[in-house]
Length: 103
Image (cartoon, rainbow, N blue to C red):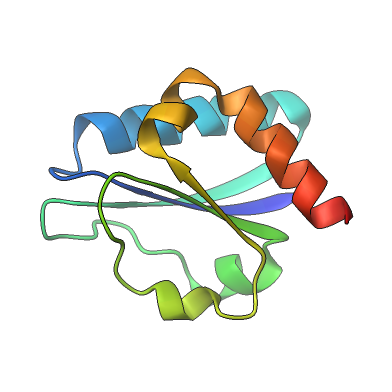
């Protein structure tokens, strides 16, 4: 499975990074590819490429605040979760992602 992940919290520092790290670790454990974009603090340091989005099987949006650029994912399967869920239960998030793309 290929995952495009967006994380967003108010400052774009602690929670976004912890969510990204937890989901990357779980994805790696399962043999999945994951591309990450962290948002917050009025900046987007690394954006998902058009190729990352096109090749993804699912887009996971782990957020505490609204994300910018959501229109990029209009034709993709999207799983919206909270940043806190992603930090605490990354396995559950990826289980839900698997269920969504298998149906």
